[in-house]
Length: 152
Image (cartoon, rainbow, N blue to C red):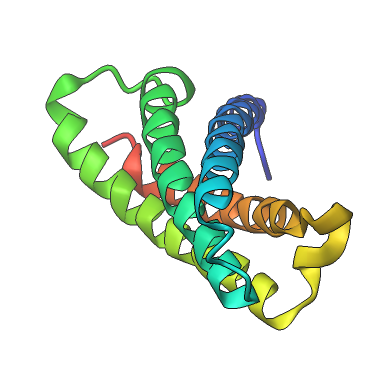
């Protein structure tokens, strides 16, 4: 059963996740725009377009992970002990890196084996990212709460 402090903490975690998602989607949108603008002439087949989407996703997710770590460490989990920074960051990047791989796999599977790319006026790749972010959020919550920022 969830207690009130855990509900507050999960709410903070979700808000930080939403903030990181804004960083992720904003950067993804910019990268997608510039990469498509400069390389779309050469990317006439779906596999080449998907490579552009995946490349933009790699960079945007990594930047969102850094944002997520810093805000969660100091605000959500209130871990002010700087001596734990190396341990926590290593654990965070293991959890987030695994979540990132899940995210990439979900986006790849949705783009490759569905017609999601053509939904939302040919912006279905954004829907693939939304699905991936939502699923991976639960992995990240449990990893962050019970391993990365676990009170010793």
